[in-house]
Length: 384
Image (cartoon, rainbow, N blue to C red; front, side, top):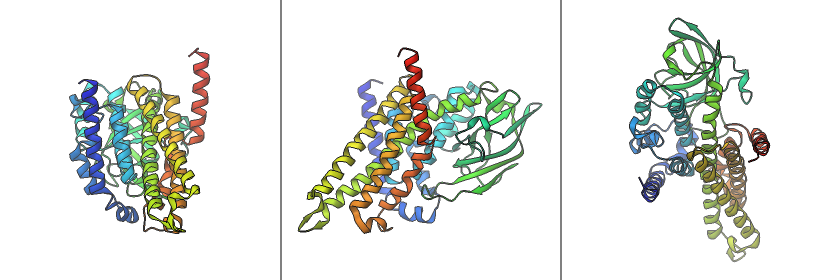
């Protein structure tokens, strides 16, 4: 496929998702969000659109498209309702882990089902006492013949109940390893239980849970790559997660900006639309500039990742800047709306509640600053 053809396909897919979001998501998102209800009907339509296989190669039943297409899809979904992106992102990271480190037999076994969305995935790294400190993982997988016996609790598992394939980090004799847990969607399955549902400020409609494993047995054939190498394998996938978070943040920031700009043109005070008041114009200018910068940083990180270049610094920069932009723009949108922006009559207050997730998720922004600084120092030492 030529570059021009790929660009055409990308535009067509992103435009298709944009129309889908406007037609099927925006009208129902407020009610689903208030009820904290999983959007089963929307997810079924996302399956039909092929969104669970955007980056999975055609050889395994996916669309085989690039990361730029993926972040475009994520931005559009986040524009309508950010929670939908969590359902896709955790799935895509699990699939990417399998694609990068799984054997051919493992890829053939899991990826076609994941590409179709028939079996959705989750990534499970964090624990109650191991968040950013990933080396403190205590969940254990004890070898017993041709099986591992899994015991421990994993925290902050997005899509934990509705997933059927969980890419999980556990401590084996060799160190931290990456394992695939297969289950049926639901709160309990053969030694797996959802021990806690986490209530959240925003990011509602998609479950975030603690999952407890009690003598749960999985085949040793479900080990991804080399035992003891799971941590670097999973951390490499988090680059994708950070680019995804940046794209989500761009979607939320854009929704906040569009809402504020439209309202500023309609709201009249002192005989003219408030967009003609200098104070509002300054806000609009700053918001538009930051939004464009966030989008360009996200695109740059995606381009480097697609080209196979190291992008830990660029992914960190994109995630840091875009998430802070989403948080700031959602507040500015509320200020421009005034009192009505604080009510649940409009989605502006939802943007404000959803935005902090991007500041915290996939490594807090304090962690991102450390990643960026260390990466810059390392590059300087290499003479880059």
